[in-house]
Amino acid sequence: MAAKLGYDRSVIAKAETGERPPSPDVAAALQAELFPNGPDGLVGRLAALARRHDGPIPSWFESWLEAEAKAHALKIWQPLIVPGLFQTSEYARALFVAAGEEIERADELVTARLERHTVLDRPKAPHVVAVLDEAVLHRLIGTPAVMHDQLTHLAELADRLNIILRILPLDAQHTVLGPAFVTFRFGPPTDALLPDIAASEQLKSIVIVEDERHVHLHRLVFEALDNESLSPAKSSALILEAAESWWSAPRATAIGSEVRRSTRPRDS
Image 1 (cartoon, one colour):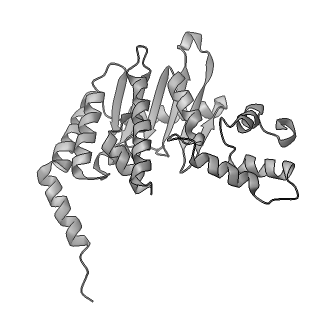
Image 2 (tube, helix red, strand yellow):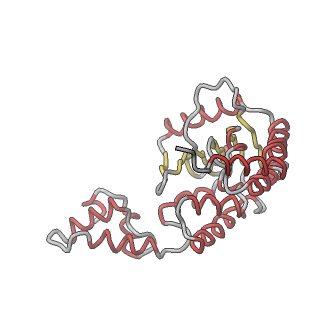
Image 3 (cartoon, rainbow, N blue to C red):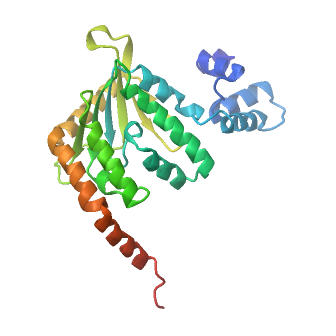
């Protein structure tokens, strides 16, 4: 069946066993092959039903989690939000609720996200280098209090021996600013068991890059961003400065007042 449809054998096997519901494209191909005369859309409807009941981790994100769990080293570029591995529970919850998730579902997703953080605490924790755009420090997610706690948590993570955190300043003379991505290295450089990959997250899917030339391009982009970023010490200082000057209690009061003024009905 896999050969006939042009998909990897594991994709069809996991759909058959229920380990991973088929994607819309795979479901459409299975529908055409198994039920050419109807009922129309049956496989797609069953796949959608399975995805809604496959637990807090959506099936399309499982490949990312597998890579994250096995990686010896990660390099993260994030221009928009704090990366998932570094998020506090309240910051993550605010993101999920803003994305339209119901409170109960958001709580399940938060729990699953916090479980991902255990990779940073294991005996052989991966070496993580992360570059965040400075705008991440000033973008309100949730409330000012949530932002203050999140930035304080970032600064604490930056003190760990296996984490290097750099901030790309707003006035950096970079030329390769682009979408978020992560590169994964599996095994020490002298004994790599698996080839490096790169990955980026879309709205409801991920893109895995395995071609060595394209993975190398991601490495070059990350290196350029890293070179334009502040040192770890200056980055930590900037993070803590943003926490206090932007998201401390006095600043939070000022922001709340500004929001209330901006939402008042204007005179016609």
